[in-house]
Structures are given as structure tokens and as C-alpha cells.
Length: 398
Image 1 (cartoon, rainbow, N blue to C red):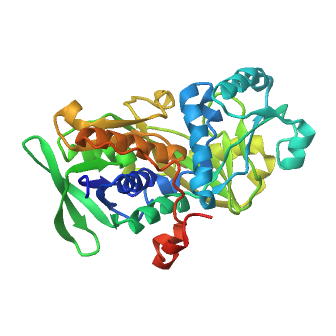
Image 2: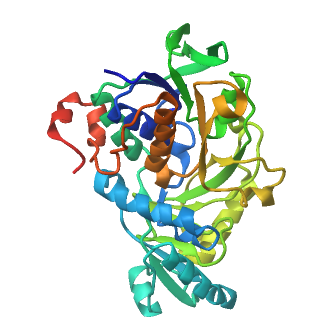
Image 3: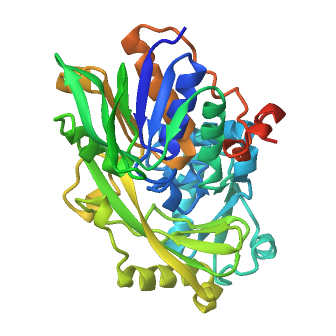
């Protein structure tokens, strides 16, 4: 017997994790996405699997959560990850002076960290700037931004979830202060229809403010676009990061046969109208060349932007990096008097499963269901099973 029907808005990584968890805990669920799956921010990030080291100095708890989720994803979705580790490299004496604080923060966040002798670092990564002064290794890796959510979607759909792409929510219905469903537009047929729901969850990231407005609610979300630049060669096998407080253009991520430098950050009012500034491409290329000089000599592949859904409001670019990288699940019944409507904002790709768990925990509390989360221990179906139902019977990711 179902605990109720939940409509999830948003077909990115967060929506994927939420609908999987809902089905695991005995709900029926429908997910709607206005475009293709992962066509928003999820499909545009550079794909770093964060050990949490980048965040450790600023927030031990967020860093610890990242490390925990890396271990979980290794167990439940290994096909979508490349556990190639990461090197934080010091370019200046100031970077070297920052190292003890960085190392201590990582250790307090349970993140393994060790200094690598420079000769060994150059053997591992021959394209590193020969002038680097220190190298620290952490368990970073890379995510296949398409494949990881597909693991969750495939498992959810095999268990009965209804997943609809090119289906945009154009209205949210309510009666007597409670949400009763959504109005959707099918972009393939241009027809509108209604979907009844006991609860509605907005997992729309940088678009969460727009979706909440359909229910007459204002929530503080800062869409923070950032540019990434890729060149046509895999220059590094480990993620290479600048050993200093987090800033712009300080991570080079290997993705298949490409190398990606990211990212910049600015504020926008509308994530649908973001364009890549030419100055960002030049800036990021210069920053990448500081870490690996060969980057600037490698043929350009592409530049693009992704809008981070930072939880909170920011009036300027500098404040944007101070907003939390944590995530928040908001019960709009409590905060805005609209029962049965939840928004989840913030977060990052590495912790998508945890975001799903926290959201479904809230849903269970609201409807009085006592079902534990099992997604951390349940291996996911392989991503190919989303399209090939014959693979469903062949088990989980391997």
C-alpha cells in the first residue's frame, strides 16, 4: 500500500535521488522535467567528485559529509565514478603557509590527506607547473554527470516511478492552503494536463525561486553561474587544485579525453538567459596555465556555464562564495502556509543521495510515515537499465 503520491519537479541529480528514495520507502511518485534529464545544472558541472577537502577549512561538517557520500557512491554506483584522487598544489610561499591549516581541517573532517614528494608528484602528473612548491594528495575523483543520475532514475523506474521528460510545470494547484497537484505542459504535444498529488517537491536548483512563485511563495535562492573551459586532451589523471582558500579558476578536472578548468562565479536574476563572458574564457585559461603550463597550448574544445543554486540571497559577486554550499529542505507549510509543498535548494553533485535522504525524511515526518532510508546500502541498477529493460533483471551496478 502506497503512503501517498508525490510529484517531483526537476530531472537533475537531486530529483533523481529523491524519486529513488521515495519509491524505496513505499511512496508512488511522478517526476517531471521540462527538458531532457540532467539538462539543467546537473549536466553542466565539471564533474568533480569532492572529497570535501576544498570545503574543509571553511566548514568541517560539509567536508565530512562529502567524504561520507564519496564512500557511499563508490559502493552503490561505481560505474559512474573515476576514483583518480586529487592533488592540491602550492604555487607560492603563501600557499605553503596555508598547508598546515588545510591538512588539519581535512583530518578533522575525516578526509585522508598526505604530502607527496615533488619528484613523485611530477611522475604522477608530468604536466604540473615545474615551479610548484608542495603537493598534497586527497581522495577526490570525477563524476560522469549523466551516468550517475541515470543509476538513480533507472532504479526508481524499474520499481514503478513515472518519469516524464519535456514536461514543464506551468501551475501549482492548491485548495484550503494545501497543494493538490500541478498543471503541466507537454512540449511534444503542446497539450496541458493536471497531475494530482498529495505532496509536491521542487528539486529545481537555480530555478527554485521561479517554481515556488507558481505557488505564491518567495524563497531566497541566488542563481550563481560559473564558466568552465575544456581543452581537447586529457592532461592530468588526478584532479589538480590550487592549494589556497577556494576561489575562481583553481580546479582542473579530467573528463574522458578532456581537461576542464573551473570555474568563475557571478550573480544572475535569470538562469535561463546566462551567456559565457569572453573574458572568463581568457581568465580561466590563464589560471589553468599557472597550474599546468601546457593547458594554454592545447586546442580549445568548449566553454559553457552552469548556475549553482546557492541557498540564500546575495547582492554581489564577492558574497556569492560566502553563501553556504550546504543544502536546505524547506517545508512551505510551516514557512509560508502552503502545506504539501517542499523546496530543496543548495547542495552539490557529490551529495545528491544525501539531499534525497533529507528531503524524503521531511516528507515522511509530514505524513507520519516511519520508514528508514535504505539508499546508502542499496546498490543501484546500472545506468543502461534506464533505456534497456532487459538489463533490470541483471542486478545492480557492477
